[in-house]
Length: 425
Ligand SMILES: Nc1nc2c(ncn2[C@@H]2O[C@H](COP(=O)(O)OP(=O)(O)OP(=O)(O)O)[C@@H](O)[C@H]2O)c(=O)[nH]1
Ligand SMILES: [Mg+2]
Image (cartoon, rainbow, N blue to C red; front, side, top):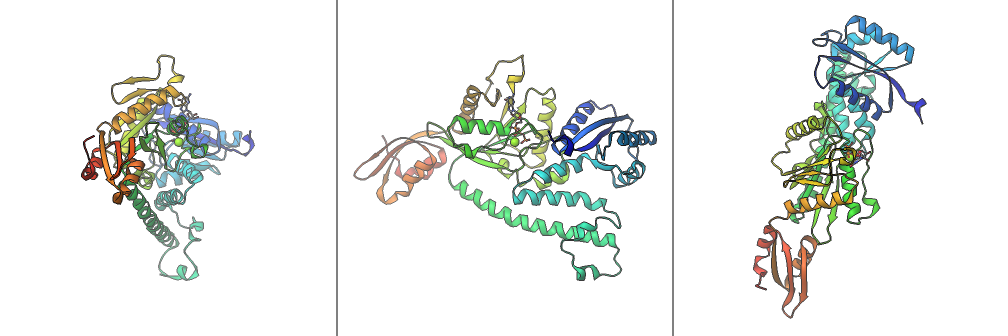
C-alpha cells in the first residue's frame, strides 16, 4: 500500500551462462523488496566475464541510464560484488544513479533489521569492513563524526584525509570488536550456566525463508506455551536476525531448549559470516541441528548446499542433523508428514501432525540413551531432588522416612552424577 514510499530500483547482472543466474536475479529482486525497494526494471548482459573496468559494457551502461530516467529509478542493484575501481568507473557512466551491489544490499537489510545491541554492532562492523577498501579521498566525511574531535584531526599533519578516514574506521572496528568481546563473554557465562544442567539443546538452521521461525512457533503452540514466547515469522528474506532460545516442555516431562537462528543465503557477504559466527554459537553448541528446507522451492537442493557450506565456514560441524523438508503442503506430489529413516522428514510447519512427528524424531535422538533409575535422596541432599525435578522426567516421587524416593528417566551423565543415591527398586 505504501508503494509511493518505496525506492525505485533497477536490478542488473552479468550472465556468464551459469545455471543459477535466473534464480540469483530473482533472489536479488526479493532482497531488494526486503530492503523497501520496488524493482522497476531488470537488465542482463551476457558476457564471458564482467568487464574488468566497468562491469557492464559501454552500450549497456547507456541503456541503463536511459531506463533509469524513464522509470525514475534512483538505484542500480547489481548481482555481483564489484571491485572498487568498477564502482568508480560505473558510477561515472551512470550519472546520478546510486550503485548498490548484492553485498551492500544484504548489509543494508541487516542494518535495518537488527534489533539487539549485539546484532547491531555485528552489522556495523561488517559494514565498516566492507567500506574500508572502498573509501575514496574527500568522501565518507560522515564516518569521521564519531571518535574524531578537532584534536584528533590535527594529528599527523603529513597524513592525507583518506588515510585519516581509514584510520578512523579501523579504530571504530577495533572499538566495536572490543565491546562485542565483552558481551560475548557474558553470553558464554550464561551458556556455561545452562551447560551445568543437562537440558539438551536443539538448533533450527537453514536457508532464509525456509520456515525455521514458523516451526519454532508451531512447536511452542503445540505444547501450549504462552503467546508471548512466539518469535517473528514472515514471508520475507532475513526475517530473523537474532538467535532466540525457547524451552520446549513435553507432556512426559522431558524437555529441551530450541533455538531459532539467522538464515543463510547464496553469496552471503564474507564480512557477515565473520560477524554472525557468535550469533550462531547456539547452533555450534547444540546437541542436534534441524535443517529446515523449503521443499516447495525448486532450488531446495542448492539451498541445502549453501546452508552446509555456511555452517562449515562458521565451524558448525559434527553435530547430528535432522533434514526437515518443510512446506510439503505446497507440493502436490507428496503426502505428509512422512518420515524416511531416522533423520529425514517431509512436513509442514503449520500442521500439528507434522510437528508431533518432528518432536518424536527429536526426542528419539536426544533421549535415546535415557535410563529409568530409582534414587533415594536423603533430606540433607535435598538440592538433588530439585535438580531431578528441573532436569529430568520424573516417573514417580514418594516421601519415605529416610528421604525422597524418585524414579526418573535420566541421561547417562545424570545417572553418574547421582549414582551414590541409586537404589534397586
Ligand atoms: N505454506 C506453507 N508456508 C510456510 C510453511 N512454513 C513456513 N511458511 C511460510 O514461509 C514464510 C517464511 O517463514 P519463516 O518461518 O519466517 O522463515 P525463516 O526460516 O524463519 O526465515 P528467516 O528468518 O528469514 O531466515 C512465512 O510466510 C511462513 O508463513 C509451511 O509449512 N507451509
Ligand atoms: Mg526466521
